[in-house]
Structure formats: structure tokens, C-alpha cells
Length: 553
Image (cartoon, rainbow, N blue to C red; front, side):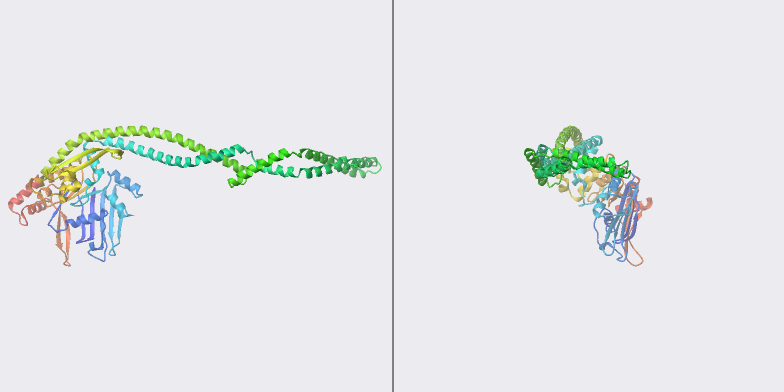
């Protein structure tokens, strides 16, 4: 609900403040007094573009500020949070236009773009102007209207929940399908690589070990010769070194009694003798491990060659790298298999959700179909009351090829202004004034069932008078029992229905300039203003009496 609108330095308004009530606010005044200027200023709050021509005082900036009570507007407060802005029960929206032409917009003191401003304020204010934007051109509004009169809130929510689930699961499936298609392109090649590695079946460090063994096999004769020569000197020669050391030990033991100092030398030689015997045994062991086996050498060469080929193919360095690659390929191929299983599971889930969704859509469609005839009949009655006796509204419901967020129905509001039986979309068949009255009829009929923002009607009663104008006033009054309504009018029957009556007028100020002023009228002032709407600047007693009767009614 709009709590206060403040306009500063805009067109012929130096400063003006509007404090509407929560029901029906009527605005009257002479033609050219500035009513449309007030709407123009309000349009800036709604995201319209502006230029410096709106500034009276070029040395000061233009500021338009609106304060809204948004305590019950959950969709708006949710949108604020989604836009990372402060959420409170009160929202302040401000537009500033500098003399240099720079325009800035703020929501709760947070700067926003005009696109964001327009999107958010559209949840706060619905401005109905002749030849302006009309909600009837939007598919969402037509569905909302029919679902409101059909009392489809529970069915709509149930369908929407299933539809969102369907979209979510389908999106997940689409991602998996793309991943699977990409993986499948590589799967055959990866399987070939894996088979190659599994066939090679390398053990840890096998390639490195094979390379080392090949070096030994290639030099086996040289190794054997060195080992045999060394062992020959120690234990097998004409005078083996081990035997000679044994003799030395025996000779020294024989003189220890007479030369005790020789004992230390004898022990050192005995220790060396033990070490040399051990060396001889180790040489014999090494010698036995050296094989002159051409077949084994050929086998080792083949394993090493196979390993080097794979290392080069995959640009790797070690056997461990090949084993790691083999494990990676196994995991990737397993993920392809796992993805297929997940796809099968999700396809089953999607089918179940789709069945439930279509059933919910059919229930929603049946209720819409049942509600449309009585809705169209009631709208046509109201159109006749508001001065459109030859107009007919027709609502068509056809099936879609694919369900969307609204269900399986196409809903269209069609209009024939002159009983020609040529029904066209309302936006093409109705004039600006007719569209405003059509919207009034629709919104008055659905007011108790639909959440609506502050509704502003700009001269919805243009071109009508008498009983039609009275009926427009009644519909506006009914609508205002559920929603805040602001209506600019030239009809006394409409003005009298307001719970608050504002009067717009021009005033010459001290410097000789003309300024637009706005005043909330008390009861007597209101009777006078309405009497002037009936009988001119000098209303007769009959006009005053008529005005009193209208206000009293």
C-alpha cells in the first residue's frame, strides 16, 4: 500500500505531498491543473525514463519519493531478498534527477538500475492509463484471473510444485544425456587403452627392474670373469690368500708365549681372515645368480620394449604412472556405467512425476473450463453497467502441445465492442478507455481472491456519464474494500465514492510562477467540489443538493 508520495521540483510542482488512505482515493480538478503531472512523477518511481525538462529549478535536483507498507506483500519482499536488498515492512523508493540529466534510483537507499526498479515496483503499483501498459496483454494475468474465479489456489500450487519438480529432474537428465554422449564418444578408445594396459599387466617397478636386469645380462660374461677371478685369488689359487692368512695366524700363535705383544697382531689377522672367507662366500653367491640365458634375456627385452612403448605413447615416465593411468581409465569407464544407471533411475522418476503433473493439469483445466462461462457472463453484465452495452467478452480455453508453468491450457481474453461477432484479443479490439473499464470489471470481480498492488486508474470514466458513471464508482468502491485504489476522475458519481477526496489546483506564488497544489478535502469542501463538477464554478442549489446526496450515498 502506498503510504506517502512526495514530489519535489517536478514540472510545475515545487513541492507536493500525497498521503492516501488504504481504500478508494479520488483525485479531481480542472483540466490542466496538474493531475497528469502527478501521474508522470509517479511513473518515475515505476521505472520510466526522464530528462531535465521536468526540472523547474535548474539549480536543484528533482526528487520523487514513495513510501510503501509492504508487510503483507510476500512476493515483493522475497524479490528484495533475491536482489540482495534490505527487507522490512516499510519500503522507500526514490528517484533523483540532476540538472545535468543524471538519473539515479534507490530502493531502501540501495542504488538500483531502472530495469530492477521497474520489475520490483510492478509488484507495488498497477497504473492503468489509457493507451498505457495493460495487464490483459500478459498471459500470467489471464491465468491468475481465471484461477481466482475458479478458486484454484490449491490446485494451482499443487500443479506448480509438480511442474517445478519435473523441470528440475528433466534438467538433471539433460545434463546427464550430454555427459553420456560426450563420454560415449571417448569410451571405445578408453576401453582400447585400458585393454592394452591390462594385457601388459605390469607389476610395480617392473619396467625399471627389467632395464636393470638387461644391463646385467648384457655384461654377464664380464661380471662372471670378475667374480671368478676374485674368488680364485681368495680360495682357489696356487697360494690362496685365505690359506696364507691361516698360516700366518698359526705362526703368530706359536710365539705369543714368548712375545705377548704378537697377540694383538694375530687377532687382527684372524678378523681379516673371517672377513675374507665371508667375502669369498658372497662372491660365490653373486656368481651363482649371474645367468648366461639368452631366452630370459629375450623375454626381459620384450617386456622392457613393451613398457617403453606405452610410456612414450602416454607421455609418462615410470611404471607407476602407467598403473595410475590404468586405474584412472577403469574409474572413468565405470562412471559411464554409473551414469547409465542414474539415467535409468531419473527417467523412471521423471515419468512418474510427469504422470502426476499431467493429472494435476487436467484437474486444473477442468476447474478452469467450468468457471469460464459464468465469469464471461458476469463480466459482460458489468461491461453493460459501465457504459458498454454492446460489448462482449469471450474467454477461450484450448490445449497446449506441451505443458508449461501455467498447465496444459491456452487462455485468451477476446473482445467484441459492437456485437459484430468478430472477437479479437482485447489489446487489439478495445480502445484505451474501454480497456481501463474492462480491467476495472475484471479486477472488481476477482478482488477478494487475488492479491493486487496499489491500483491507479487514470480517467477510467472517460466518455461515460449518468448511470454508467455511477456503476463505475460502485465497482471502484467494491474493489477498494480489498485493495488500495487511486482514481483520477471527472465524474461526480465516481468522485463521491472515494473514502478520501483530493483536489488538484493551480496557484500563483510570490514570484509570479504557477504551481500545482493538492489538498485533501473535508466533507464540506468535498460537497462544494462535487457540486462544481455538476453545475460549474457557481453551482446551483440543486447541484449542491445533488452533491450532498452523492456523498451521503
